[in-house]
Image (cartoon, rainbow, N blue to C red; front, top):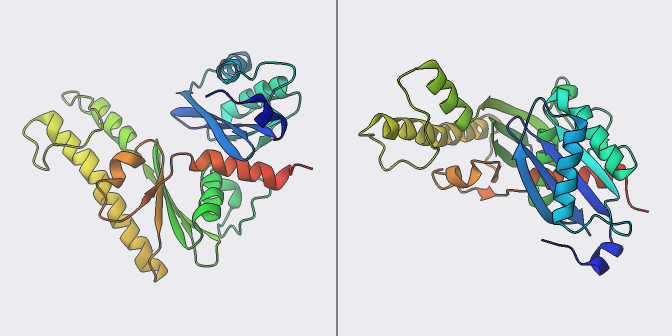
Length: 271
């Protein structure tokens, strides 16, 4: 979607880059609204020049390659350490300034009740910041991607901790690699709990098993907290799994990118 020039002139244009283990998402914000999103596969061998080409292609599609209209700033969340500086260098060349990188030292507005806050993944920080801002607290944030992350925002609004487990697709791929006779499956809702073929049985085991696991973990977290909370889900598998969950949950596909926008506003407010 192209942005109207009159709209751009009155607002900061922010590039948000969320580098996950499997997928990298680029977001473009103007006037505090997400205007465009683009995804590509995360490559460990990516160079800063290649990252610049990806950025240029994304911006060209938004009609933002011109002297008058260009991004003002950027912010990066990266869970692949070898790629953090690659993207930072690419954005610095594109923007003419060093982008923010989510990590220690960045203002979050959160109380982090974690033994070592430096261990918390930047994507988890962005998720919690955005979720608390949009949905209040207490709240559980379930991020379903390469890993399944559940973050707990307690009744004081603090990040109380959470859990990390293998994600749905990662588990399916690992089993297919370890067991030569088992096929790689598509992650879709199975036709039946009782599979009549190996493929159907694997889909039932993985997809329904993941839904049951998440439901069980939510109940265990609530029991430990001593109270129930709303639940918001995000990530690549959220839409599929929320329909199988026994709990009412909201799906917010752009939670992490909005968290990056908020973190930028906390640390480099527009004057």
